[in-house]
Amino acid sequence: MPSPAPPAAPVEVPATRLAAAAAQVRQGTVTLALSALERIASESATRAQLGALDQAFLLALLLECRLARGDMSEAMNLGDELTAYLAEHAESHGLGVALAHHAQGDLAAALGDPEVAAGHYLAAGRASEGLPESPELLPWRASEALALVRAHRVREAAVRANDHYAAALRDGSPYAVAHALRVLAAIQSGTQRIAHLREARALLADVRSERLAAQIDADLAGLLMLTTAPGAAAEAVELLRRAEIYAGGQELWPLQGRVRRMLDRLGEAPLRMTSEALALLTVTERRVAGLAAGGLTNRQIAEQLLVSIKAVEWHLSRTYRKLGISSRTALTSIFGIPA
Image (cartoon, rainbow, N blue to C red):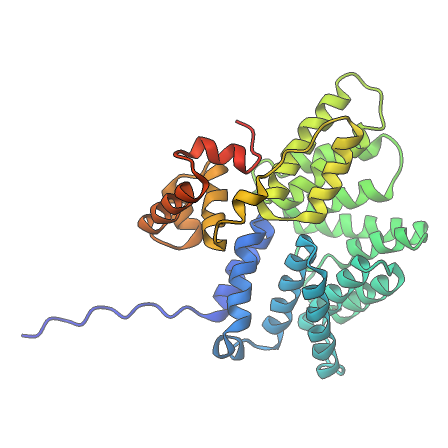
């Protein structure tokens, strides 16, 4: 009697891959998320299987990652794709159109045009009318509030920020509430700002959201630098170092630049990565080495990159030879991570 055929390997659904990449973006593993998103975008057969909503979601996530890394040329190319998407769906409403408008707002904000950004965020809100509210997926009120502040429309900004905070509380997501508190701290004045940021940071204690946490750390450090409270400067340095290490590891240059400017004002030298040495590594070797320098085991690295442990060992071996080192300990200094 013939042996039963082995079960077929599960087919990976494009929408499932997209959802996994979106989770990585929220967790703050931007490098891994961008790699996964670019693979989806470059595979024409895979991308063709995505519906209109997921097409918009893909573009919005790609743009978010590109802006986080300061890749403005690639971000503007994505902006062109989003413009084409909105033209194609000019008569439509719904979450896809809302996500596309929100992403266009982010691009306009990054390009220094808060009025245009605010218009896109408002369009995102109108396109999502009648849908279940999702302040984590579509924080259009929070984004509009920040744009309105930059446009010197502070009273309108406060209304939007408070409305978003109320929506986040109804939603109950710690990520959404922490983000809303960060926005309130940016809009308001007085000592309450520090309290909002401390509360936001506490909400993220058991949530993996490293980018939002680093942004909150940088905001809090900036406010502490303005006070004369005992220990404020030391706490600010500690917060900034944590954000600097994260931003450097994920190559989020705008955030890293902001953090290092604050460190400079505090008289602190930046942690330096040995860029000449790192230039010798391939993208994969650098990624594996960065995770190893951050304290992950070979098994954890393999699980995060979806490769075998043997592959991780092979990449680390090649990295050690190229850099002329023999251990993980040396990697931490090369990547600017203190022991």
